[in-house]
Image (cartoon, rainbow, N blue to C red; front, side, top):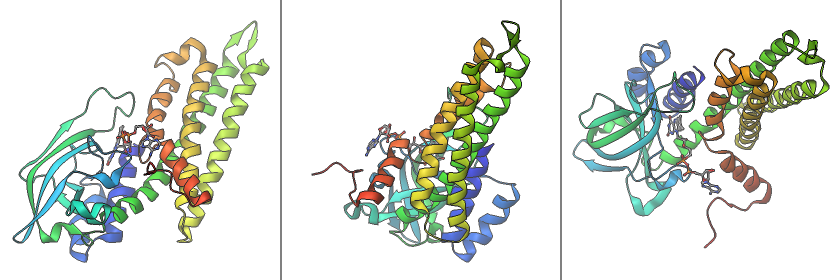
Length: 305
Ligand SMILES: Cc1cc2nc3c(=O)[nH]c(=O)nc-3n(C[C@H](O)[C@H](O)[C@H](O)COP(=O)(O)OP(=O)(O)OC[C@H]3O[C@@H](n4cnc5c(N)ncnc54)[C@H](O)[C@@H]3O)c2cc1C
């Protein structure tokens, strides 16, 4: 659910609201905000993940519009969306300054999504690989200016990461609740599991992580509400909250013993669903590099030389 809401609101609607023309807003936002239609965010490609500026999808100018060709990978809601934000390169020699963002109707000829199966978690959320085979769109599909694509993607991820982080506070909370309930009910050695100090230690570790993650998310949120820069604070919240969700879910399974390993209890799903959060919308390593770049002034994301 959170992936669906986050992609729809933070990545798609938020970007159209911020960067779209009045016509684009009128065309797409009523359906998207009422939930009648879905949108998707097409940044990642088979050969381009963390290095988003190196996109290979090409947009070529044609009479009255653009022709887009390429491949997108891991696109949430890609099979069900009515509109796709497609990031494409218009002038490869200009690198990230040549990137543009297009609002592509998914019914366009040459736009072909395929379902990705076999995910560890997020099984209720659709994920697609998308082929773009000379998809033609009008000039009115360009969002912002040519060259704004990288800025649009990064500003969208700033909100998306915040949403991922706050969802992870929820996973931590769920882990605490499930673990307290189970450990106070189940008995071993004649007493509830919660009587053992080593079990309480696991619950205390989860609670500390939950609360620290919540405070970091709140700090980033207060900055966002005040329209102040929050990129680094959002990366800190995303890094800590996502790693904490994985850690808490793992601990929650431990508290449940063998019962935690099957789907009679929610904790095995918490672990499967938490796992992707340290990967998408910028991996934990990428968040660390954003934080380190801010602290040192040195960009370690791109290899020297
Ligand atoms: C379920 C799911 C849904 C997704 N939904 C969307 C979506 O809706 N839209 C979209 O555009 N994308 C989506 N993604 C893609 C996601 O954002 C990427 O998977 C993610 O950005 C990582 O890219 P990659 O998988 O290519 O990994 P890679 O970039 O190949 O990274 C592999 C490993 O190398 C590390 N690494 C890479 N570069 C560096 C570096 N400079 N320094 C140190 N370590 C580095 C990474 O941290 C990682 O550990 C989704 C992914 C999944 C799994």
